[in-house]
Length: 171
Image (tube, rainbow, N blue to C red; front, side, top):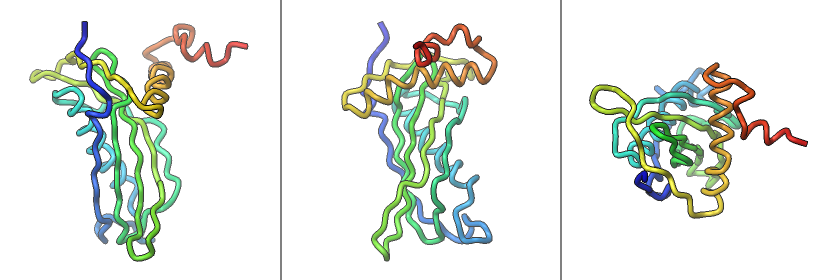
């Protein structure tokens, strides 16, 4: 039987201040810099869950809703949603806060997949993720569908084998 860990144990909060070197010519945080920050927060979350070295396997569904401005405080919240044998899906929310105006806005959201590896870089088993809250359970339940979609799009699974996806369209 696999070891189990609550998904809450993987929760990470990371905070950054947007400085001039992070922005484009419109004084907005560059998308690549945002993805860099998201990758770091998600990797820390996956490491906390697995207690292992992790590598980024995929990034999907990154949405850029609103611009993050120079001087904003960026808060990233990441947590493992589900663990498979050696891979883990991590959900990330990004918030931009304008402290002088007192406004805070959710600007980005994404799912990252990480694989835990041993010292030689070979995949290694990770603990099962156990959700407890309503939101954790909802993300956990959707993770298998998202994983199958990733695998189908990457050509690593035949669409006919994606039972969870097929169930979505069964009438």
